[in-house]
Image (tube, rainbow, N blue to C red; front, side, top):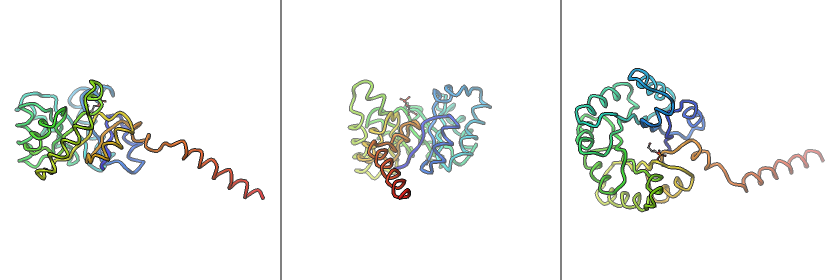
Amino acid sequence: MKFFIDTANLDQIREAQDLGVLDGVTTNPSLMAKEAISGDKNVMQHYKDICAIVDDNVSAEVISIDFEGMIKEGEALAALDDKIVVKIPMTKDGVKALKYFSDKGIRTNCTLIFSAGQALLAAKAGANYVSPFLGRLDDIGADSFGLIEDIRLIFDNYGYETEILAASIRNTVHIVECAKIGADVMTGPLSSILGLLKHPLTDSGLAQFLADHKKAAGQ
Ligand code: G3P
């Protein structure tokens, strides 16, 4: 399973990269705004800064909602660095843009996926990644893991190479369940990744080992 961090915060991206398990970064306009990044020049520079930290897979989202605008923005983003994956919303123009970029060999991530039908359409259009939003489905009481299972089944039925990027991850349970179901990638906050480290028996076990070592050394 690939691990992406879902943030535009450079310190958090560095911390995840330092851990040695990071495969990429996903951003969106809300996450960029959270870091107070605005203006075309600053936004582009921020994506370059992110690319300088990680090895690959930096999802950068277009703001335009019309086909021509998406193409212009997406091409400019892709030209920044080979690590850029152009993030496109699941709309009619978005599907056309996915096909356009796929034909040009520019990688894409189709975002705001909430149904298996949307994921199927994005895969047919040649998206490299589809991003179903788990947490937001949970928020409305929908079956988020069931959606991942359905997409997995459909992609396997037809051999689509599009990767399932489980997004809107909120906690470690989301990550582990997605890994069991077969999501290819998860993207979540740093806290969800670091949360995988924790178990109280690990803490008490380590404390006991160290205490026993100290006791033995003192004898
Ligand atoms: O990057 C898209 C997605 O991960 C957003 O997550 O927590 O805002 O629902 P969230």
